[in-house]
Length: 213
Length: 252
Image 1 (cartoon, rainbow over the protein chains, first blue to last red):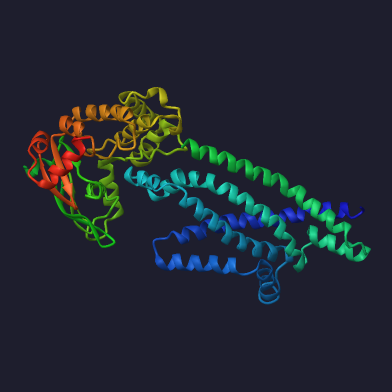
Image 2 (image 1 turned 180 degrees about the vertical axis):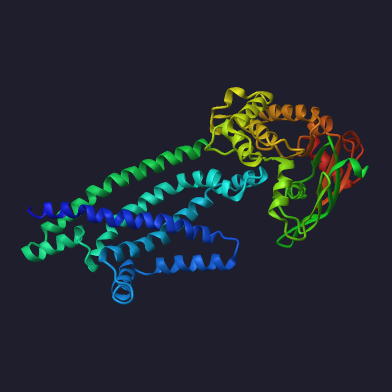
Protein backbone atom coordinates (compact mmCIF):
# COMPACT_ATOMS: atom_id res chain seq x y z
CA UNK A 1 0.00 0.00 0.00
CA UNK A 2 3.03 2.29 0.16
CA UNK A 3 2.42 3.00 -3.52
CA UNK A 4 -0.76 4.92 -2.78
CA UNK A 5 0.92 8.18 -1.67
CA UNK A 6 3.06 8.04 -4.82
CA UNK A 7 -0.06 7.68 -6.99
CA UNK A 8 -1.89 10.44 -5.14
CA UNK A 9 1.10 12.72 -5.59
CA UNK A 10 0.86 12.17 -9.36
CA UNK A 11 -2.84 13.10 -9.55
CA UNK A 12 -2.10 16.80 -10.21
CA UNK A 13 -0.03 15.85 -13.26
CA UNK A 14 -2.85 13.70 -14.67
CA UNK A 15 -5.36 16.45 -13.98
CA UNK A 16 -3.01 19.02 -15.50
CA UNK A 17 -2.59 17.06 -18.74
CA UNK A 18 -6.35 16.45 -18.91
CA UNK A 19 -7.37 20.04 -18.18
CA UNK A 20 -4.80 21.66 -20.47
CA UNK A 21 -5.62 19.30 -23.38
CA UNK A 22 -9.33 19.88 -22.85
CA UNK A 23 -8.89 23.66 -22.82
CA UNK A 24 -6.86 23.59 -26.04
CA UNK A 25 -9.39 21.25 -27.62
CA UNK A 26 -12.37 23.34 -26.55
CA UNK A 27 -10.94 26.47 -28.21
CA UNK A 28 -9.44 24.84 -31.33
CA UNK A 29 -12.65 22.83 -31.71
CA UNK A 30 -14.58 26.09 -32.04
CA UNK A 31 -12.26 27.17 -34.84
CA UNK A 32 -12.71 23.82 -36.58
CA UNK A 33 -16.50 23.89 -36.38
CA UNK A 34 -16.53 27.49 -37.60
CA UNK A 35 -14.41 26.28 -40.52
CA UNK A 36 -16.79 23.45 -41.26
CA UNK A 37 -19.68 25.91 -41.45
CA UNK A 38 -17.75 28.47 -43.48
CA UNK A 39 -19.15 30.05 -46.64
CA UNK A 40 -16.03 28.99 -48.54
CA UNK A 41 -15.83 25.46 -49.88
CA UNK A 42 -12.03 25.36 -49.51
CA UNK A 43 -12.20 26.24 -45.80
CA UNK A 44 -14.97 23.69 -45.26
CA UNK A 45 -12.98 20.95 -47.02
CA UNK A 46 -9.79 21.80 -45.19
CA UNK A 47 -11.45 21.81 -41.76
CA UNK A 48 -13.13 18.55 -42.51
CA UNK A 49 -9.85 16.93 -43.57
CA UNK A 50 -8.12 18.12 -40.39
CA UNK A 51 -10.89 16.57 -38.29
CA UNK A 52 -10.82 13.29 -40.24
CA UNK A 53 -7.02 12.99 -39.99
CA UNK A 54 -6.91 13.78 -36.27
CA UNK A 55 -9.70 11.33 -35.54
CA UNK A 56 -8.18 8.70 -37.78
CA UNK A 57 -4.79 8.50 -36.05
CA UNK A 58 -4.55 6.50 -32.82
CA UNK A 59 -3.71 9.05 -30.09
CA UNK A 60 -0.56 7.21 -29.12
CA UNK A 61 0.75 7.40 -32.68
CA UNK A 62 0.06 11.13 -32.75
CA UNK A 63 1.86 11.54 -29.42
CA UNK A 64 4.93 9.67 -30.77
CA UNK A 65 4.93 11.74 -33.95
CA UNK A 66 4.89 14.92 -31.90
CA UNK A 67 7.33 13.93 -29.19
CA UNK A 68 9.81 11.62 -30.91
CA UNK A 69 9.30 12.93 -34.43
CA UNK A 70 8.89 16.66 -34.28
CA UNK A 71 10.17 16.97 -30.71
CA UNK A 72 13.56 15.39 -31.42
CA UNK A 73 14.16 17.59 -34.45
CA UNK A 74 13.64 21.28 -34.89
CA UNK A 75 11.36 21.87 -31.93
CA UNK A 76 12.67 20.72 -28.56
CA UNK A 77 9.72 19.82 -26.36
CA UNK A 78 9.19 18.75 -22.79
CA UNK A 79 7.11 15.55 -22.49
CA UNK A 80 4.34 17.54 -20.81
CA UNK A 81 4.17 20.02 -23.69
CA UNK A 82 4.11 17.28 -26.31
CA UNK A 83 1.41 15.43 -24.35
CA UNK A 84 -0.81 18.47 -24.10
CA UNK A 85 -0.37 19.37 -27.77
CA UNK A 86 -1.11 15.81 -28.89
CA UNK A 87 -4.16 15.22 -26.72
CA UNK A 88 -5.26 18.82 -27.33
CA UNK A 89 -5.37 18.19 -31.08
CA UNK A 90 -7.29 14.95 -30.64
CA UNK A 91 -9.71 16.79 -28.35
CA UNK A 92 -10.15 19.61 -30.87
CA UNK A 93 -11.24 17.16 -33.54
CA UNK A 94 -13.57 15.33 -31.19
CA UNK A 95 -15.09 18.41 -29.58
CA UNK A 96 -15.64 20.04 -32.98
CA UNK A 97 -17.88 17.08 -33.78
CA UNK A 98 -19.71 17.53 -30.47
CA UNK A 99 -20.20 21.23 -31.27
CA UNK A 100 -21.33 20.43 -34.80
CA UNK A 101 -23.97 18.02 -33.55
CA UNK A 102 -25.18 20.56 -31.01
CA UNK A 103 -25.52 23.24 -33.68
CA UNK A 104 -27.60 20.88 -35.79
CA UNK A 105 -29.89 20.47 -32.78
CA UNK A 106 -30.77 24.19 -32.81
CA UNK A 107 -33.98 24.52 -34.85
CA UNK A 108 -33.67 26.24 -38.23
CA UNK A 109 -36.40 28.65 -37.13
CA UNK A 110 -34.01 30.19 -34.59
CA UNK A 111 -31.58 31.18 -37.35
CA UNK A 112 -34.47 32.44 -39.48
CA UNK A 113 -35.99 34.51 -36.69
CA UNK A 114 -32.60 36.11 -36.01
CA UNK A 115 -32.16 36.83 -39.73
CA UNK A 116 -35.64 38.27 -40.09
CA UNK A 117 -35.03 40.56 -37.11
CA UNK A 118 -31.89 41.83 -38.82
CA UNK A 119 -29.48 40.62 -36.13
CA UNK A 120 -25.87 40.52 -37.31
CA UNK A 121 -24.04 37.24 -37.79
CA UNK A 122 -21.99 37.74 -34.65
CA UNK A 123 -24.99 38.68 -32.49
CA UNK A 124 -26.90 35.70 -33.84
CA UNK A 125 -24.04 33.34 -33.03
CA UNK A 126 -23.20 34.73 -29.61
CA UNK A 127 -26.62 35.60 -28.21
CA UNK A 128 -29.07 33.30 -29.95
CA UNK A 129 -27.38 30.15 -31.24
CA UNK A 130 -24.40 29.52 -28.94
CA UNK A 131 -26.36 29.54 -25.65
CA UNK A 132 -28.81 26.99 -27.04
CA UNK A 133 -26.13 24.84 -28.65
CA UNK A 134 -24.00 24.90 -25.50
CA UNK A 135 -26.74 23.25 -23.47
CA UNK A 136 -26.87 20.44 -25.98
CA UNK A 137 -23.08 20.16 -26.14
CA UNK A 138 -22.47 20.10 -22.38
CA UNK A 139 -23.09 16.39 -21.69
CA UNK A 140 -20.98 15.39 -24.71
CA UNK A 141 -18.18 17.68 -23.56
CA UNK A 142 -18.15 16.17 -20.08
CA UNK A 143 -18.18 12.67 -21.55
CA UNK A 144 -15.14 13.61 -23.61
CA UNK A 145 -13.42 15.01 -20.51
CA UNK A 146 -13.85 11.61 -18.85
CA UNK A 147 -12.39 9.79 -21.87
CA UNK A 148 -9.53 12.26 -21.89
CA UNK A 149 -8.84 11.66 -18.22
CA UNK A 150 -8.42 7.95 -18.94
CA UNK A 151 -6.56 8.45 -22.21
CA UNK A 152 -4.07 10.67 -20.40
CA UNK A 153 -2.52 7.40 -19.19
CA UNK A 154 -1.10 7.13 -22.72
CA UNK A 155 1.30 9.99 -22.11
CA UNK A 156 3.22 7.81 -19.65
CA UNK A 157 4.78 6.36 -22.82
CA UNK A 158 6.53 9.63 -23.59
CA UNK A 159 7.72 10.09 -20.02
CA UNK A 160 5.18 12.35 -18.37
CA UNK A 161 5.20 11.48 -14.65
CA UNK A 162 1.45 11.09 -14.26
CA UNK A 163 -0.51 8.34 -12.44
CA UNK A 164 0.20 5.51 -14.89
CA UNK A 165 3.86 6.36 -15.21
CA UNK A 166 4.65 6.41 -11.46
CA UNK A 167 2.54 3.30 -10.87
CA UNK A 168 4.37 1.39 -13.57
CA UNK A 169 7.75 2.40 -12.19
CA UNK A 170 6.79 1.30 -8.72
CA UNK A 171 5.42 -2.01 -9.97
CA UNK A 172 8.67 -2.75 -11.76
CA UNK A 173 10.91 -1.88 -8.84
CA UNK A 174 8.80 -3.56 -6.16
CA UNK A 175 7.96 -6.66 -8.16
CA UNK A 176 4.29 -6.41 -7.24
CA UNK A 177 2.49 -6.35 -10.56
CA UNK A 178 -1.09 -6.37 -9.30
CA UNK A 179 -1.75 -4.05 -6.38
CA UNK A 180 -0.26 -0.84 -7.78
CA UNK A 181 -2.36 -1.10 -10.96
CA UNK A 182 -5.54 -1.91 -9.05
CA UNK A 183 -4.94 1.15 -6.89
CA UNK A 184 -4.31 3.26 -9.99
CA UNK A 185 -7.57 1.99 -11.48
CA UNK A 186 -9.40 2.91 -8.28
CA UNK A 187 -7.95 6.43 -8.39
CA UNK A 188 -9.10 6.92 -12.00
CA UNK A 189 -12.58 5.76 -11.05
CA UNK A 190 -12.63 8.04 -8.02
CA UNK A 191 -11.81 11.07 -10.18
CA UNK A 192 -14.01 10.08 -13.12
CA UNK A 193 -17.19 9.09 -11.30
CA UNK A 194 -18.20 12.58 -10.13
CA UNK A 195 -17.75 13.77 -13.71
CA UNK A 196 -19.95 10.95 -14.98
CA UNK A 197 -22.66 11.77 -12.44
CA UNK A 198 -22.48 15.42 -13.42
CA UNK A 199 -22.80 14.48 -17.10
CA UNK A 200 -25.89 12.35 -16.46
CA UNK A 201 -27.43 15.15 -14.41
CA UNK A 202 -26.80 17.63 -17.24
CA UNK A 203 -28.32 15.26 -19.76
CA UNK A 204 -31.46 14.84 -17.68
CA UNK A 205 -31.75 18.57 -17.16
CA UNK A 206 -31.34 19.18 -20.88
CA UNK A 207 -34.02 16.62 -21.73
CA UNK A 208 -36.37 18.47 -19.41
CA UNK A 209 -35.66 21.85 -21.02
CA UNK A 210 -36.20 20.34 -24.46
CA UNK A 211 -39.52 18.88 -23.42
CA UNK A 212 -40.65 22.22 -22.01
CA UNK A 213 -39.70 24.17 -25.14
CA UNK B 1 -52.61 50.44 -58.80
CA UNK B 2 -50.82 53.75 -58.56
CA UNK B 3 -47.06 53.11 -58.47
CA UNK B 4 -46.39 56.17 -56.33
CA UNK B 5 -48.38 54.93 -53.36
CA UNK B 6 -47.11 51.37 -53.38
CA UNK B 7 -44.80 50.59 -50.47
CA UNK B 8 -43.77 47.18 -51.74
CA UNK B 9 -43.34 45.84 -55.27
CA UNK B 10 -42.22 42.48 -56.50
CA UNK B 11 -41.25 42.28 -60.19
CA UNK B 12 -40.97 38.90 -61.91
CA UNK B 13 -39.71 37.18 -58.79
CA UNK B 14 -38.60 33.62 -59.41
CA UNK B 15 -37.33 30.97 -57.04
CA UNK B 16 -36.41 27.40 -57.95
CA UNK B 17 -35.58 24.59 -55.51
CA UNK B 18 -33.74 21.64 -57.03
CA UNK B 19 -35.46 21.97 -60.38
CA UNK B 20 -38.88 22.70 -58.89
CA UNK B 21 -40.12 26.21 -59.59
CA UNK B 22 -41.64 27.30 -56.27
CA UNK B 23 -42.27 30.89 -57.30
CA UNK B 24 -42.70 31.39 -61.01
CA UNK B 25 -42.43 35.03 -61.99
CA UNK B 26 -44.65 36.74 -59.43
CA UNK B 27 -45.29 40.48 -59.64
CA UNK B 28 -47.16 42.28 -56.91
CA UNK B 29 -47.73 45.83 -55.70
CA UNK B 30 -48.88 46.53 -52.17
CA UNK B 31 -50.12 49.97 -51.10
CA UNK B 32 -49.20 51.58 -47.80
CA UNK B 33 -51.67 50.44 -45.18
CA UNK B 34 -53.07 47.67 -47.32
CA UNK B 35 -53.80 44.24 -45.83
CA UNK B 36 -53.23 41.46 -48.33
CA UNK B 37 -54.23 37.89 -47.57
CA UNK B 38 -52.63 35.10 -49.58
CA UNK B 39 -54.29 31.71 -49.82
CA UNK B 40 -53.65 28.64 -51.90
CA UNK B 41 -53.02 24.90 -51.64
CA UNK B 42 -49.83 23.76 -49.93
CA UNK B 43 -46.93 23.78 -52.34
CA UNK B 44 -48.45 26.70 -54.23
CA UNK B 45 -45.44 28.87 -53.38
CA UNK B 46 -47.22 31.31 -51.08
CA UNK B 47 -44.81 30.89 -48.17
CA UNK B 48 -41.81 30.96 -50.47
CA UNK B 49 -43.07 34.17 -52.06
CA UNK B 50 -43.47 35.69 -48.60
CA UNK B 51 -39.96 34.57 -47.61
CA UNK B 52 -38.58 36.12 -50.78
CA UNK B 53 -39.83 39.54 -49.67
CA UNK B 54 -37.40 39.74 -46.74
CA UNK B 55 -34.86 37.57 -48.53
CA UNK B 56 -35.03 34.61 -46.18
CA UNK B 57 -35.10 32.93 -49.57
CA UNK B 58 -33.00 34.80 -52.10
CA UNK B 59 -34.91 34.77 -55.40
CA UNK B 60 -33.08 33.56 -58.49
CA UNK B 61 -34.41 36.48 -60.46
CA UNK B 62 -36.53 39.56 -59.99
CA UNK B 63 -36.63 42.90 -58.24
CA UNK B 64 -37.95 43.73 -54.79
CA UNK B 65 -38.74 47.36 -54.03
CA UNK B 66 -39.47 48.47 -50.50
CA UNK B 67 -40.49 52.08 -50.10
CA UNK B 68 -38.58 53.21 -53.19
CA UNK B 69 -35.39 51.21 -52.61
CA UNK B 70 -34.79 48.66 -55.36
CA UNK B 71 -33.06 45.36 -54.75
CA UNK B 72 -32.06 43.38 -57.79
CA UNK B 73 -31.86 39.84 -56.49
CA UNK B 74 -30.09 38.27 -59.45
CA UNK B 75 -26.74 39.66 -58.23
CA UNK B 76 -25.34 39.40 -54.72
CA UNK B 77 -27.25 41.44 -52.19
CA UNK B 78 -24.91 43.49 -50.02
CA UNK B 79 -25.05 43.09 -46.25
CA UNK B 80 -26.03 46.77 -45.95
CA UNK B 81 -28.99 46.43 -48.29
CA UNK B 82 -30.08 43.32 -46.45
CA UNK B 83 -29.97 45.08 -43.07
CA UNK B 84 -31.87 48.04 -44.49
CA UNK B 85 -34.52 45.75 -45.94
CA UNK B 86 -35.01 43.75 -42.77
CA UNK B 87 -35.31 46.87 -40.64
CA UNK B 88 -38.36 47.82 -42.62
CA UNK B 89 -39.96 44.41 -42.90
CA UNK B 90 -41.04 42.43 -39.84
CA UNK B 91 -41.93 38.76 -39.96
CA UNK B 92 -44.04 36.37 -37.90
CA UNK B 93 -43.56 32.62 -38.34
CA UNK B 94 -45.85 29.64 -38.11
CA UNK B 95 -43.64 28.16 -35.36
CA UNK B 96 -43.26 31.48 -33.42
CA UNK B 97 -39.47 31.03 -33.15
CA UNK B 98 -39.08 32.88 -29.88
CA UNK B 99 -35.64 32.49 -28.32
CA UNK B 100 -36.26 29.83 -25.63
CA UNK B 101 -33.34 30.84 -23.40
CA UNK B 102 -34.53 34.43 -22.96
CA UNK B 103 -37.49 35.83 -21.06
CA UNK B 104 -40.36 37.30 -23.03
CA UNK B 105 -39.04 40.79 -22.25
CA UNK B 106 -35.48 39.97 -23.43
CA UNK B 107 -36.89 38.43 -26.60
CA UNK B 108 -38.45 41.77 -27.49
CA UNK B 109 -35.73 44.07 -26.13
CA UNK B 110 -32.55 42.40 -27.40
CA UNK B 111 -33.24 43.01 -31.13
CA UNK B 112 -34.07 46.65 -30.41
CA UNK B 113 -30.75 47.11 -28.61
CA UNK B 114 -28.76 45.33 -31.30
CA UNK B 115 -30.51 46.53 -34.45
CA UNK B 116 -31.74 50.00 -33.51
CA UNK B 117 -29.12 50.82 -30.88
CA UNK B 118 -31.70 51.59 -28.21
CA UNK B 119 -30.56 51.58 -24.59
CA UNK B 120 -31.80 48.78 -22.41
CA UNK B 121 -34.20 51.10 -20.56
CA UNK B 122 -35.56 52.53 -23.76
CA UNK B 123 -35.97 49.08 -25.28
CA UNK B 124 -37.67 47.68 -22.17
CA UNK B 125 -40.10 50.60 -22.08
CA UNK B 126 -41.05 50.01 -25.71
CA UNK B 127 -41.32 46.25 -25.07
CA UNK B 128 -43.69 46.77 -22.13
CA UNK B 129 -45.81 49.12 -24.23
CA UNK B 130 -46.15 46.46 -26.92
CA UNK B 131 -46.75 43.67 -24.42
CA UNK B 132 -49.60 45.71 -23.04
CA UNK B 133 -50.96 46.14 -26.55
CA UNK B 134 -51.01 42.37 -27.12
CA UNK B 135 -52.35 41.84 -23.59
CA UNK B 136 -49.33 40.08 -22.11
CA UNK B 137 -47.59 42.54 -19.81
CA UNK B 138 -47.92 40.02 -16.97
CA UNK B 139 -45.76 37.55 -18.96
CA UNK B 140 -42.75 39.86 -19.30
CA UNK B 141 -40.52 37.83 -17.01
CA UNK B 142 -41.75 34.40 -18.10
CA UNK B 143 -39.80 32.13 -20.44
CA UNK B 144 -41.50 31.19 -23.73
CA UNK B 145 -41.95 27.58 -22.57
CA UNK B 146 -44.25 28.90 -19.84
CA UNK B 147 -46.53 30.59 -22.38
CA UNK B 148 -49.26 29.00 -24.47
CA UNK B 149 -48.82 28.87 -28.24
CA UNK B 150 -51.19 31.80 -28.70
CA UNK B 151 -49.26 33.83 -26.14
CA UNK B 152 -45.96 32.95 -27.79
CA UNK B 153 -47.26 34.09 -31.14
CA UNK B 154 -48.48 37.38 -29.67
CA UNK B 155 -45.02 37.89 -28.15
CA UNK B 156 -43.50 37.15 -31.55
CA UNK B 157 -45.73 39.83 -33.07
CA UNK B 158 -44.63 42.29 -30.37
CA UNK B 159 -40.99 41.39 -31.02
CA UNK B 160 -41.34 42.18 -34.72
CA UNK B 161 -43.30 45.40 -34.06
CA UNK B 162 -40.66 46.62 -31.61
CA UNK B 163 -38.34 47.34 -34.55
CA UNK B 164 -40.92 49.75 -36.02
CA UNK B 165 -41.33 47.97 -39.35
CA UNK B 166 -43.26 49.48 -42.23
CA UNK B 167 -44.48 46.13 -43.48
CA UNK B 168 -45.40 43.01 -41.52
CA UNK B 169 -45.27 39.54 -43.06
CA UNK B 170 -47.25 36.70 -41.47
CA UNK B 171 -46.44 33.14 -42.52
CA UNK B 172 -49.44 31.01 -41.49
CA UNK B 173 -49.41 32.58 -38.01
CA UNK B 174 -52.25 30.45 -36.64
CA UNK B 175 -51.62 27.12 -38.37
CA UNK B 176 -49.76 25.63 -35.40
CA UNK B 177 -52.42 26.72 -32.89
CA UNK B 178 -55.63 25.29 -31.48
CA UNK B 179 -58.56 27.19 -33.01
CA UNK B 180 -59.25 28.97 -29.72
CA UNK B 181 -55.67 30.15 -29.31
CA UNK B 182 -55.65 31.15 -32.96
CA UNK B 183 -58.47 33.57 -32.26
CA UNK B 184 -56.46 35.64 -29.79
CA UNK B 185 -53.68 35.94 -32.37
CA UNK B 186 -56.14 36.95 -35.07
CA UNK B 187 -57.59 39.56 -32.72
CA UNK B 188 -54.15 41.13 -32.31
CA UNK B 189 -53.65 41.07 -36.08
CA UNK B 190 -57.03 42.67 -36.64
CA UNK B 191 -56.12 45.42 -34.21
CA UNK B 192 -52.81 45.90 -36.01
CA UNK B 193 -54.59 46.21 -39.35
CA UNK B 194 -56.81 48.90 -37.83
CA UNK B 195 -53.72 50.96 -36.96
CA UNK B 196 -52.88 51.14 -40.65
CA UNK B 197 -49.99 48.66 -40.74
CA UNK B 198 -49.19 47.23 -44.17
CA UNK B 199 -49.64 43.48 -43.83
CA UNK B 200 -49.17 40.45 -46.03
CA UNK B 201 -50.71 37.39 -44.46
CA UNK B 202 -50.33 33.86 -45.77
CA UNK B 203 -53.19 32.01 -44.13
CA UNK B 204 -55.86 29.35 -44.24
CA UNK B 205 -58.19 31.49 -42.11
CA UNK B 206 -60.82 32.33 -44.68
CA UNK B 207 -62.94 34.30 -42.25
CA UNK B 208 -60.00 36.52 -41.32
CA UNK B 209 -59.16 37.00 -45.00
CA UNK B 210 -62.77 37.88 -45.79
CA UNK B 211 -63.25 40.37 -42.99
CA UNK B 212 -59.85 41.99 -42.45
CA UNK B 213 -58.02 41.87 -45.78
CA UNK B 214 -58.39 44.56 -48.41
CA UNK B 215 -57.28 42.16 -51.06
CA UNK B 216 -57.26 38.39 -51.41
CA UNK B 217 -54.66 36.66 -53.55
CA UNK B 218 -55.04 33.04 -54.63
CA UNK B 219 -51.81 31.27 -55.55
CA UNK B 220 -51.27 27.96 -57.31
CA UNK B 221 -48.17 26.43 -58.89
CA UNK B 222 -45.98 29.38 -58.01
CA UNK B 223 -48.18 31.94 -59.70
CA UNK B 224 -50.91 34.36 -58.70
CA UNK B 225 -54.05 32.71 -60.02
CA UNK B 226 -56.41 35.52 -59.22
CA UNK B 227 -56.80 38.44 -56.86
CA UNK B 228 -59.30 41.08 -55.87
CA UNK B 229 -61.55 42.22 -53.02
CA UNK B 230 -62.02 39.18 -50.75
CA UNK B 231 -65.78 38.94 -51.10
CA UNK B 232 -65.56 39.07 -54.87
CA UNK B 233 -62.90 36.35 -55.06
CA UNK B 234 -64.71 34.17 -52.53
CA UNK B 235 -68.19 34.58 -54.02
CA UNK B 236 -67.33 34.62 -57.68
CA UNK B 237 -64.00 32.88 -58.35
CA UNK B 238 -62.91 33.08 -61.99
CA UNK B 239 -60.80 29.93 -62.21
CA UNK B 240 -61.91 26.32 -61.82
CA UNK B 241 -58.75 25.77 -59.74
CA UNK B 242 -59.79 28.51 -57.31
CA UNK B 243 -63.29 27.05 -57.03
CA UNK B 244 -61.92 23.60 -56.17
CA UNK B 245 -59.60 25.03 -53.55
CA UNK B 246 -62.25 27.30 -52.03
CA UNK B 247 -64.81 24.56 -51.76
CA UNK B 248 -62.19 22.39 -50.07
CA UNK B 249 -61.61 24.96 -47.33
CA UNK B 250 -65.15 26.30 -47.04
CA UNK B 251 -67.06 23.03 -47.02
CA UNK B 252 -65.45 21.47 -43.98
